[in-house]
Image (cartoon, rainbow, N blue to C red):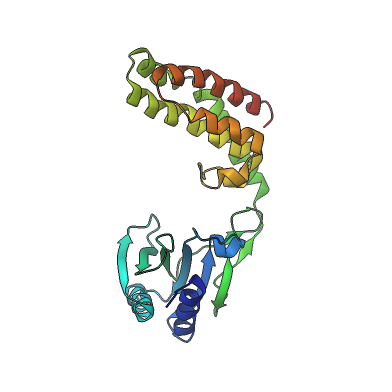
Amino acid sequence: MKIDRDQIINKINDELKDNPYVFAFWLEGADAHNTVDKFSDIDIWIDVKDGHEKKIIGQVRSILSKITQLDFDHEIEHPHPKIRQTFFHLKDTSEFLIIDTCIQSHSREFWYTKEPADEKVKILFDKSNVISFRDLDKIEFQNSQKTSIAELKKTFLFFQAWVMKGVNRDNFLEALSYYHSFILEPLVELLRIRYQPTKQKFGLKHIERDIPNDVLKILENLYKVNSTEEINTMAQKANKLFFEVLDEV
């Protein structure tokens, strides 16, 4: 029997919607953005009554086990204290069909912001108006961007001393690590500020869809280094791009 994502989502929805301790069930990621392909996972969010988080995780586990055997079940510590995150995978399904499940305590105060391109959800049910959207605080956002740009401008060249130290000593791995940390990562952040500012801290996630293709090709090339000599050459090219973009923000 072939198991697909809709079967999994519908099964969870059917069994949770009448649970009095579950207030909302929604999807983020590919399902929310209508970008599902054969490599997409399932990003599940469930809002539950405080004190019932463990029980609902167990219920989701039981629901999935009714579909077929689980071959992976692992909870990680989420950065937010009121979110519990567990990864599940069903036997004989695509290796990419990972069921990323976040259980949110109902007392968590949160909302989505209307403007950011990535803040979209697909609501299966919402009994208590859990999911809400607010307008972006444009003044606060602009001030935050100005602070970030000033920080990048001040530190970008300064911290490259560590990169050049590794290059001059011909320590490739050390130089590579610093090249990523002190040149490529701040460059990517600046590119996001320029082209997709509400996703400033996304790093390389979705980068292919977030910056123009011609800039993307330059960025890809900057990541293709195999020696300290190439790091030295690419660092100069990265610097050139950085200050060109800095003039545009």
